Each structure stands twice: as structure tokens, then as C-alpha cells.
Image (cartoon, rainbow, N blue to C red):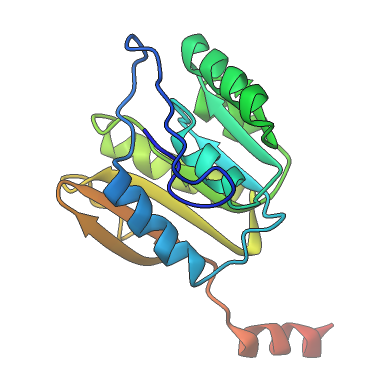
Amino acid sequence: MRIISGKHKGRRLVAPKNLPVRPTTDMCKESLFNILNNHFNFHGLKVLDLFAGTGNISYEFASRGAGPITSVDADLGCINFIKKTTSELDLDISTIKSDVFSFLERNKATYDIIFADPPYDLSQENFEKIIQLIFENELLDEEGMLIVEHSKHTKLEHMTNFSFSKNYGGSVFSFYEFESDEEEDFDEEDEG
């Protein structure tokens, strides 16, 4: 695993072999960040990384100047590796050891970008539940973006706030944003 851009560009990180992870490939990660580059200035972005695993995506955001970044994973080994790497590289990443669903139910903070990379064998229902919880609990800023990484066998384009998706081999990134409906906002002001 390597950091592909930013102040730690080219830095290789070796995670312990026994972690229960499927890291996002460098090719997918590069494609993802090329898309995000067109939407965001990374400096100071508040990022939530769900099912963070090795922290691969968190490090990429941090290297590009995003932060604070919150990495959530249920596995203690993953959390310890992220803490160790964060300390070594002096990154603005905090870790939370938690089941992601429990975290989404109780969390009150909001984020500019939420990235979720659940195990590909998670049920369709649970993939949908992640998206529902994020929007129901208002965890995404109005101008923010949710990205869910999933296999091509999981279909998520029917979910509310779906914007677009990109396929890379067997992996898919689905993007969700609030629809900007200025006419509706204008009507609400009139009624007030």
C-alpha cells in the first residue's frame, strides 16, 4: 500500500498480514481521488472513513491536507495500525473502535466527505442501511459527498441522493450528494 499524492506521496506502508481487510487498490484509489479533486479543495476537509481497515483512504486524505479525519473500524488490530501510522506520519486522524452501525446511530458530528468501504459480502440490506443512517442522522454537510465502495453485484443506484457511480473491474464507487433545489428553498422562505 502506498500514498499516491500530497506531502507523503510515494510513502509505502506495510500493514500486518493478519488484519481482516481488503484494501482499496492503488488504481481504484487514484481514480477516486481524481474525481474528488474536481469537487473539493482538500485542505481542512472534515472526513469520516467507515470500515477504515488499514487506514489506506484516511492516509490519502491526510496527505493531501484534509483533517480532522475520523477512522472507524470494529477490529482492534486495524485501529492499532492506524494509530501507529498516524503517529509516525504526524497526521490529523483520530480512531474510533466501534461497530459502524452503532457509531452511525449515536454520532452527532457532520462531515464534508464520508467514505464507506464495507466488506463486499455485507448484505444488500446492510449496504442500504449505511446510506439511510447517514442521511437520516444528517451526518453529511449540505455540500458534502458520501462515497460507498462495493462490488459490482451490489446495486445501490436506487437509493435517495444517488448522484453517479464509477466501475473499476469488480469494484464500484457510488457517490451520493444532496440535490440542490434552489426553487424549493425559495418557496420555503416565502412561506416563512
